[in-house]
Image 1 (cartoon, rainbow over the protein chains, first blue to last red):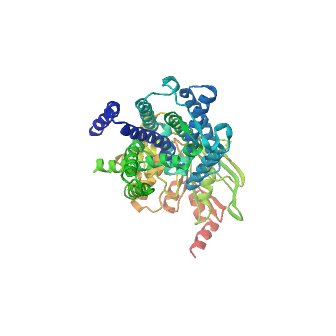
Image 2 (tube, chains in turn red, purple):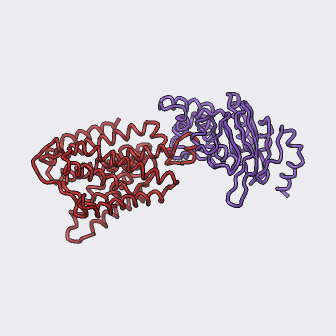
Image 3 (cartoon, rainbow over the protein chains, first blue to last red):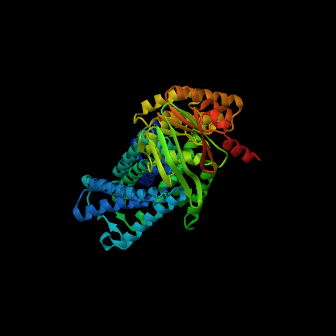
Length: 313
Length: 237
């Protein structure tokens, strides 16, 4: 009951408070929601199915580039383009997943292959003039056009990403209580035992892959519209992949709210350390790294694991 | 015939783990599979359940070949197995472990939960249903392993040393459980080192030694068989 009340209050604040926040805080909150969203998308595959992708930037980049290119070249609204990107990312994810899983890549080998796929796409984007090569793509500034995913102020973007993050949480909750969710957790725990109990491990992992990459791509499209600029390193680079998995691992991989909770802790830590230590490049990253090491050492099941232990005690 | 393996062999490089072994399980039967350590019993289980593909030979379940089928597909066709070294999903609850098996016959979470509750009741783990599987004792883990297999609603259940590491009282309880499983119409193929148990349970026993079948027959016949006695005594001597 207390948890539900707390959740309702938090949700109310997220809906009502932002219009009264100074722009700087609103920007941080948008980052929190975007990272929480990406963490939730990664969580489907990494947290529930236990397949640690280090290459979700591939799907993020596909989403960002697809909606942007469709908009710039063909005038397709990014609202539609983001779903095209999602479909393309899911197809790419299925292909990459099939190649990896079919040949029995597990654990770190799977992680490395996903990283390689993302890097491959980054290199392709850098060397392809048609997609702007290393200079990337700019979405020209223009007047607000909500139908084209262009808003006048940051507040509207905030509500879009809030809706996406809540949607991802809702999907995760549905997943957790479905046959697929049980199958994925069984695979994470012990793939052979899951197979013996009738779980089609390959098929289930591919479904997780498709869902996870689809959702990640939508995040990429949001990013492109919000910042109005993308390039291969920002979208396909390893930093994006790491961001997604960090939120989930710090917050609690394989839990519904873990990734969002992780984003609420990590993003402010990152921002604060950057703001507190100006002028000494790199120190903020070191501080951020220290926090990560502490969390992972002392909270192996993330913040949600800690919350659960407290509730049981 | 429910299950037929015909001249099945498995070679790993130069090592022949199973050499032209034939065995069958009829509907309603309990068949024992025994042999000294390293005889190839577990490899036979891996072959029958789809974890290994046989190098040669045929395996049929209810008349249809299952060679090359994946474990989950074989499970769907009615063959479930347990593992010699128990493999619980340690971070899931006991109930969730068994639900995973129950999903073999349904897509509905409620139906799977009801089936899992029923099976847990049947194997005597109902009181532990909400405990994480990692907190179970070894005897309970063995029961959980059987429960997960049973939840898939098999026609044939392969049990791989479900009594190893248990004390005499626990063994008696497992023998009783196996009898009750059998009474529900499930056929069984059982690997076991506890001779008293396998002799009491099996209608027929197949003896493996060095990957080959050296004897087959009723418990009484097998225990009198000179080659079997030699195989076991040879191991100890």
